[in-house]
Image (tube, rainbow, N blue to C red; front, top):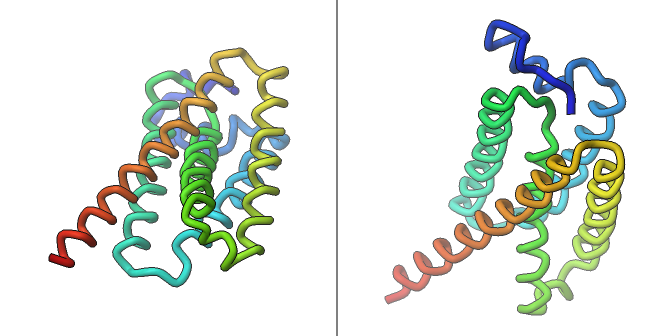
Length: 166
């Protein structure tokens, strides 16, 4: 990750964070991965109740906020924490679908999710060899964060659904 600690004004620092301090390779890899991870994330919430869509948007907002606050505090650059968190969220949804056998309804989602997981893992492995080890730890923790926040959202949604049933 590039250093954005000494870029002065907060808007300059946010621009540095979002653009990987003008590193075009990092921009391409990470924004491509963000778009890829958003596809299964989007499919998870496609065709469901508006409350779950609001939850997905709030989770995504939280991931963005977390990434930018983290980089403002530490002086790092990038959006990889966002796509790793979305990846973790998608992994939870994927596993939840497998356990409930919902995956049989959408082979497209199953295949796309598997492809996205493979690309995400590949990029994390690439970064493990090219960036400091702390970056890999951050990526893995972001996946755990995404998994946990999606789990909490699912639990909350399911609990509220049961509450409204009785």
